[in-house]
Length: 298
Image (cartoon, rainbow, N blue to C red; front, side, top):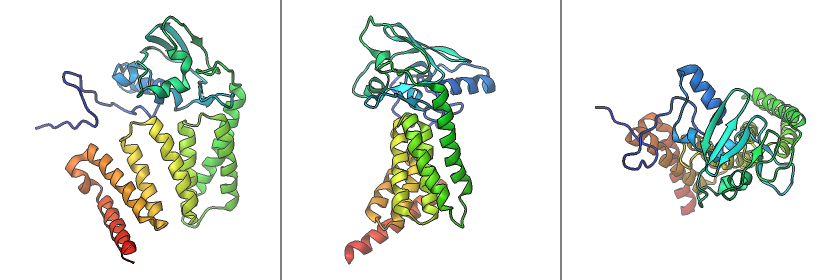
């Protein structure tokens, strides 16, 4: 008997959707479509690939040059509103039509980063690469891409240098400076920034700077929570890293809270098999509970 486990609520008569590859949050729409067409020779028309979603807008975006604007700047996609609820999105190697979501309290994120795409009915827009999707300001893409790549290179050097023997101080210093530059160029919710925060967190763990590691780990998780659904397994793995750091800081209550979040997420994916597939989660939980009990009894 074949059993299919859904990770989210599926309304009656709604078709079941199975991912053939990278999901929303892992790659943007263009890269997902290109990969599926190359590997499986079809154009995906699932709900995530048929409607404009927050993650696809921000995952690889640059930030608006206007300081008080949270709008995104795309360096590849051209957005053209062709009907009140229909958007034409095109790039160098793809073109597709996406339905525009109804802006509700659950979709307010799109309104904040791409206000021009979902303005009132009857208002058209035609926005090319380099222009903010909220206010229309222009960003120099050639300079921004070069500066972003340079910052990412320094952070990658830090990641490549991580060993059991520690991390050179100069590389951490350079990576922190590069992260600061990256945040001035890339959108604050972009996956590039999340990965940079995660790399620096790992470096701090290696040298025993757990407080700083925790701050960067939390910053990474906060971005991932923008890219992925709230209970996505990617967030579960990052929360497990956070729990480990919190245990190292003797913050047993916080660690236990993080582990319980991990349990909830992994149970959604693996059900009763979770403890067999990830036995270390139960071990972490027991350790956190034991240490918390000892702390409270003192």
